[in-house]
Length: 71
Image (cartoon, rainbow, N blue to C red):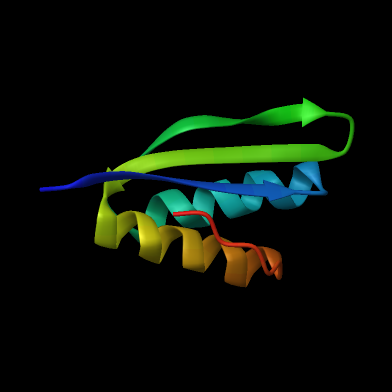
């Protein structure tokens, strides 16, 4: 199995917490970092199998309504 990492950065801490929850529940992934990185910014970094990470990041993007994708 190939491991991957995925990251989503948001402009809202509240939306970041909600998005991290959705990402974690949407696939077999492990959250590496889920925290505010500066006032008003939130970062989520996950790891797992390539397919699970891609699916999880896509769900996070869908929830956050952002357009960047990092897998």
